[in-house]
Image 1 (tube, rainbow, N blue to C red):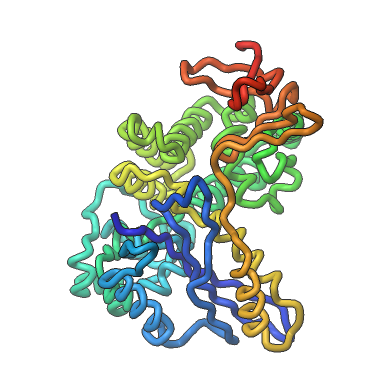
Image 2 (cartoon, rainbow, N blue to C red):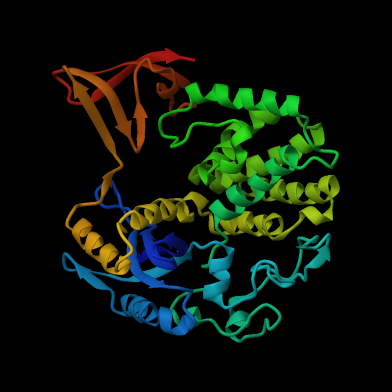
Amino acid sequence: MPIALAVRALIRIIQVAANMIILVVASNLINLVVKNYKVSPFVIGIYYGDSKPENIDVYLHKFIEEINNLYDEGFTYKNIINRVRIKKNCCDAPARAFIKCIKGHNGYYACERCTQQGVRIDNKVVYPNLNNTLRKHESFSKYEYKDHQLRLSPLLNIKGINVISDINLDYMHMACLGVMKKLLKHWIKERKHANALTPSVIKCMSAELENMASMVPCEFQRKPRGFDELDRWKATEYRFFMLYAGPIVLKDYISKQAYIKFLNFHVAMRIICSDRFIKVFGRVASECIENFCVGLRNLYGEEFLEYNMHSIYHMVNDAITEKLNVNDVSSFPFENFLGQILKLVRGPAKPLQQIARRLTEMCEIEDCKPSGFHAHIHNNKIKFMKINGFKIYPNKTKDSHILLPNDQVMCVELIYSENSDSRNKMLGLLQ
């Protein structure tokens, strides 16, 4: 099996002597396991200048040349030839438009999956229909979508790539920072519509959300904050609300119709974020996201069906078709990695050289993180245990509950090992 790469072009403005653009092409491994170690994203190339590259062909030329060589010849490791192909490209909408040479997400033919023409309502371009003719790689490569394409993209020169399906609709930007953020701001921030929530209701919802903080496991990087800080929420906080907190917090406060439509969205997202669920409940996810999109039009009006609200339907169906967990090809690990890259710039002089030198130093350090089983022993007692990235702390309510193979929940009270048996054991109460 070829080594599959998830590649992303990341564009950020950094404050040095003047506003300058750092554009990083980074990659991550999708189907490679190195002795139960999780491999972090790594840099392929970095561009630095006062604007985006004027010529995308020149910018991507060396990358395309190298990836084609790895596709044909591969590389040898321990006398085994490994070939490489791009499986997914994780970008936000402006970056996808840039590398695919297509019209931006505000255009009338901006949808990357279907040929629907958008219509302008209330100064917004919306896509009111779902079932339209789907775009094909063959037609894209022949420049048949002239109302969608600006010109032929250099990505078409990459061997084995499907420019339609392999340039994925990014889950982080589309679902978390797109749909979930828009729904919350519609309910909480916008006042002149029937679905707006009163200040007293918002205060009660915030209290419920903040009360969850003490029960949120340590694996969540950010604890929930109230809606008074909604403008400062990060993508991980929108994801937490969408996948976990939303059904609890919203239940008694928004209208029944709005709540049911949110549950449709929640269920679809939960399914495509799970390796187990997406293989079994793919059809359920497809029905849920269709009900959600149709319900948006009936509940909030056609003007609500902007680019993200329309494309989320395609994103879910793409994941179902490929049976691919969207967490495996999302921008979350790349965003964290980009933050680390930008911190390597310590001054305004020669930022590109600074990054290159720090990355060279970092390459000398093994960056693989263990993802299997690990126990942490203190004074002959097992303080906590880490299994596949999850920490289990005995008698610590938020980190002691586990799901057993028989689907029962157990609260772990003790982790121990016997001298005659090197395996660690857990004792607990079934809930």
